Image (cartoon, rainbow, N blue to C red; front, side, top):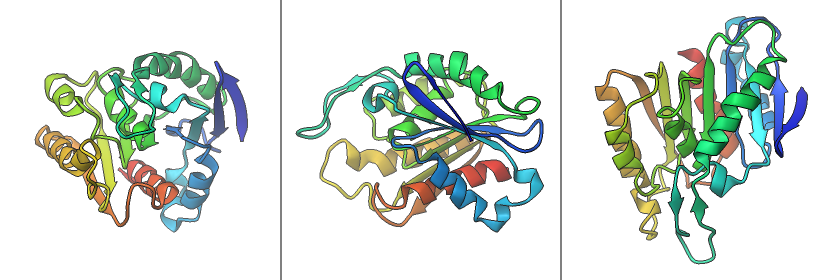
Length: 229
């Protein structure tokens, strides 16, 4: 594992043993990269040579700023607002983190994936409309309840049509009185159907449990799906 820091962001890279393999960028809340990679290595379907890839996990993020596409107020009492720093962070990711990461791999990236959980799942979806850097997307328990995201998706075009998109949720995530969060499953299913209608290879997985259950396992599941397409 190779570790370095760029503008306070901590990047941990587990390079592929082989040249010209995919690189998956995984924005994390608290350095879950190693745990997710371990889960993938324990999966017999992922031990084949053709499933080898580089994982780059980014942490020490200003979560409610870096992962949010625009400002929204706190969604419940005592929460912090989201302050719309996704474009700035995406610029840092593509212009500085990505090149430095790929200085440490053999050859070049066969393709790039972008994965994330919760707000980072929202960020992964939003990024498709801002950059051509990533061709496969995995949004696990993505915060697609985010006010305005449905309207944004319906009125904007991809910078480059993605090869495939993975969406997942817990089956209890929408069972809440919170007026923001309760729309998450309806929104996610609407987005899923929209992408399918566009002919994009898209899947939607409903996992057991609430938003906080099995985050690492759900993340590994989404990355595994990306790799197998």
